Length: 156
Image (cartoon, rainbow, N blue to C red):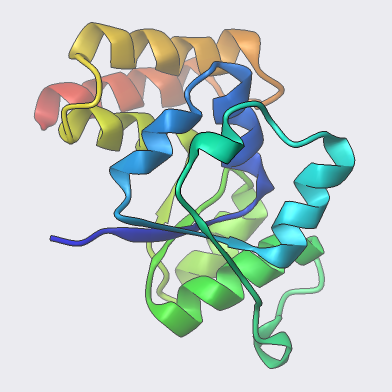
């Protein structure tokens, strides 16, 4: 099964903060909207992004919806809808907007779980990285969400 995804800035930043960008290679195709790349460029492109295989894409401006979201989130959702790929985001409002548009969504914890499922890391390492997301990154994630992610590992 070929797995393709488009990412907004959140997972790129948060996974980089725990040296886990390589887990994005669990996707056969990774798309990054130009708007998102410009956002992360302004904050300093995370180490490791140049080691990833990804395609810079343009979002169809006519598809950009929800004004409550930032430009990168809107672009990523538009690309996800247009190309029927998974949206990677850690933003709750973006998750909700994508779900309303019937787009499959995964956050950074879901990327770690996928990396485990695809054999990129063992269960203990996956659980450790999920906990690191909570402790060592700018991502706000509750203990309950981390524990649910770890339970997902055991269900795979």
